[in-house]
Amino acid sequence: MAETGKGMGKTLAQSLRESGVSRRGFLKFCTATASMMALPPSMAPAIAQALGKAKRPSVIWLSFQECTGCTESLTRSHSPTVENLIFDYISLDYHHTLQVAAGEGAEAAREAAMRENKGQYIVVVDGSIPLGNPGYSAIAGISNLQMLEETVAGAAAVVAVGTCAAFGGLPHAKPNPTGAVSVSEIVKDKPVVNVSGCPPIPTVITGVLAHFLTFGSLPELDALGRPMAFFGKSIHDRCYRRPFYDKGLYAETFDDEGARKGWCLYRLGCKGPMAYNACATAKWNRGTSWPVESGHGCLGCSEPDFWDAGGFYNALSIPDSDITRQAVYVAGAGVALGAVAGAVNRSKQARAREEHEPVTIDDLDKRP
Amino acid sequence: MSTPVDFLLWVRGPGFDIALVVFIIGILIRLLEVLILGRKPDYAEPRGGELGAGLRTLLTRTLPEPGTFKRSPFTVVGGYIWHIGFFISLFLFVPHIELIDATIGLSWPGIASNLVDAVAAVTLVTLVAMLFSRLTHPVKRLLSGPEDYLSWLVTFLPVMTGYLAYHRMIDPYPLVLGLHILSVEILMVVFPFTKLMHAFTFIIARWYNGAMAGRRGVQS
Ligand code: HEM
Ligand code: SF4
Ligand code: SF4
Image (cartoon, rainbow over all chains, first blue to last red; front, top):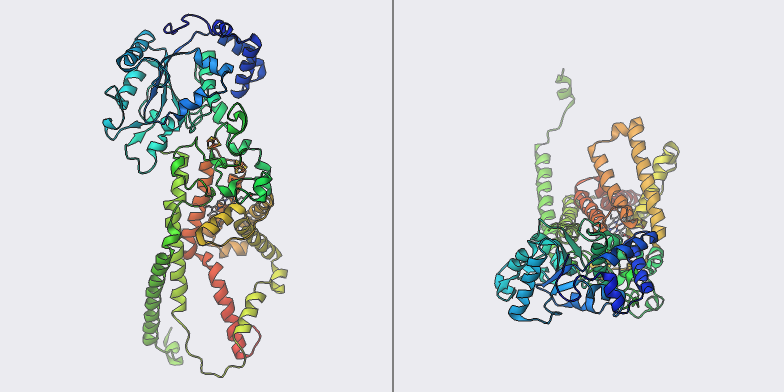
């Protein structure tokens, strides 16, 4: 595997020891990883063994139409925990924001990593790719599309980090002025893992990389290409406010009695029922809390088109249309058409009356 | 990209618009085409009031007639159970109240969701039993045509898909919620052009029956 960058050739276990991470801390991380990946705890030693022997794979991180929030999320991950160190001990050979090299030097590092680790490196992408005009987003004069195709050609796998890379995200929101698309719309011949979220949970990003290091393969994916271990259950399924949903106890404003009592946030627009993510269990900020726990509904940020899924503060059941404002015209049209139908019926009635011929006994007698 | 979320957004957006337009226009046409026909003027001297008698009949015809009840208790009881269950599921479930509030600006308190859930389960079982009886009872079977079965289906589907959505029995959730809303939209489109129109016309018919009897001074 990767032999570039600092700490070449060292195994992960060696690197961690040198950074002062105890064996106990490392095992704890392995157990946590096992449980996050929905594996039995008995798998932890196997993970520890595999991770201990793993060598640092080369990772090339490409940033396209993005806001750097995903990188922010990753770098703020519970530092300095083991997850963070795992991240340090992959060989991050190219990353705009985090690398020291700039300009041509940076591009040269990317090309060198691609050459030296052909067929084995991992490409991580954040941000969507504009198809409208290559000039909308380019790096060192290379369009995002070209850089992606070029870099992915020799990759082992691609990890689309964040909802923009996974599903198009904010740039893809209506009216999608740049023609933004997701990574998987372009990369068809390599395995693509979608780690969605706006931003994704840091431990989920590191968890996917840990899985790759441990098993040398990608985790099991759902229909949208997301790792089942993290995205297999919805926010709603794991939400501690769920009993209130079932009992029909809802906060109606952000500071009413229901809000203070921690009731369900459905009426305040919580999209937890349609969002598949690990927030409720993995939590944010060193496991301090997560959005619903802090009193705000889920925005559904891990789902495709969540920007276009109606107002963030509208209940999930509310149709996303402005038809009610047109209701007067619709009713007007209905009245007009009803009047026409009524007129037609009246004339039919009049004609029937005119054409009506009384039947006499004689008429009936004539019939055989 | 076509995902279950795209599907949900379509049924919650353009799909809902189309269904609502067909529903409103359809109902107005069906009501006006009858009302505009009017009645021949009645020159006889009225022997009683129309209003009170009409309203009274509206109420009395809602209660089961003892003879009918004795002849077919199952049809009567089953009919009540599922109608009431349907109304509770539709009008007392909080997500639905949110929708009505957003659409027409009216809102009222809901009841516990797990209570609605129990009611929905009873409604479903009753609707299936009603269909079974329609299929097995020789007379009912003879009287039933395609429109009856269609009406049953479009009534049954929203309750069933709502139940599936609440219990998250189909993955992913946007798909099952989308199916639920789509089933309601099918109901809305079919509604004005089938016997389901009775939900509106029964008021006119019962009131008219009572009012005519009242005018003639007889019992309706
Ligand atoms: C004839 C109309 C409708 C009927 C009979 C109906 C019936 C139901 C039923 C029986 C449930 C399950 C309740 C439970 O088991 O606790 C349900 C749930 C639901 N319905 Fe409807 N429904 C109707 C219209 C609508 C419409 C128009 C929408 C939205 C546009 C909607 C949105 C929902 C939502 C969001 C749920 C909750 C699902 C969950 O808890 O995950 N329903 N409905
Ligand atoms: S707060 Fe949101 S995720 Fe939690 S139970 Fe309510 S609707 Fe579901
Ligand atoms: S709670 Fe919902 S909106 Fe918030 S981060 Fe998690 S998935 Fe995204």
